[in-house]
Image 1 (cartoon, rainbow, N blue to C red):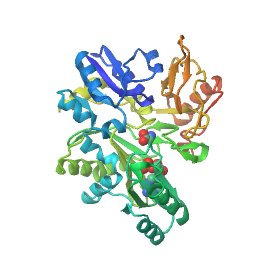
Image 2 (cartoon, rainbow, N blue to C red):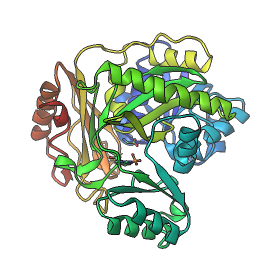
Image 3 (tube, rainbow, N blue to C red):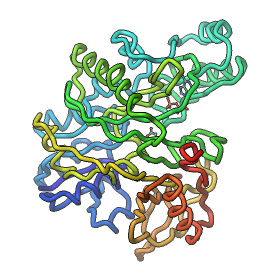
Length: 420
Ligand code: AMP
Ligand code: GLY
């Protein structure tokens, strides 16, 4: 079987690498991928994620059994609808089902309608109305661009002034273009954040191990929000009862709701949750795997990944199994300056061997050689599995100290919330 993965980051590296380990898989192509992936025998296809008809042509010409879609913007652009219309299978939600991610207002409406616990909110396209709401509610309060904003469209405001300024930037200064033409303003939820992922087809779903991302750029959750600087799974201090409660109060009703709305969900559903004093509540849904969570969840999958996805697509009961001991932890190495401006073209350390995996994101071969150079904000990620969070931290941070990371930075406290 030949498979295609759409996307180019560390997430897609982890998906493609795991698929290639499957028994019946001969080739895994990644479009457009990054050069680092070729070190794991993945094959790059030079087509961008927005060129749906070229991707479809490639899939047909190369006898691709099905395509796994990584990024949210491809899903929001209806890539799955286009593949299906061309008679091809793709793992990911249709544009209508992916609206759970690409419109925060839509996600909120679904949650309210189907009784899914989430922060109280208002949606505004008029600045004066938004300002009045913020002043009435008081701070802390959270201001979110309605549409996709590369994970940067959320401001957790500690004061009314900050919140009003954020609403001003989104609604009047066009900071996020059309994505910020409407804003969702919501109650600040206090508690520990975690992510729950599930493979889904309609009302059937298969929960993955819990994960915790680190979205701020610097140690101690300081600095600007990023795509994610490191993660670990499972979250050892989250009791199974919280997972069970999240399944009952969040996953089941939202999937039922999507069916009732005529938008049945297929693909990976990602619930970003906060464990409040009143139980888990949703801060966002994403319609895809997380990055960097995928890189620490998929190494824990012990069943045949390609067979699992084939079965889910065919509505057969998959046999999905996970490593049930230890912790998998990963640290992202990013270009100095990320998430703002940064340099490209700096040399990368050698790919790790043994039980530390290197997943590449912004990586590119130098001209005329196979030396890898940096080519993005998040550059690569080291991932390992160990008995405890602290043992995994030790392995990763020892390795990072041995590497020349000049021009890059990484957080030195990934997983520390689990080590008390
Ligand atoms: P999002 O892009 O929706 O995941 O939001 C980015 C980050 O903002 C989240 O990871 C949370 O840390 C924080 N956040 C979002 N919504 C809330 C909320 N209602 N209460 C507290 N923190 C929030
Ligand atoms: N790690 C956060 C995200 O993928 O949205």
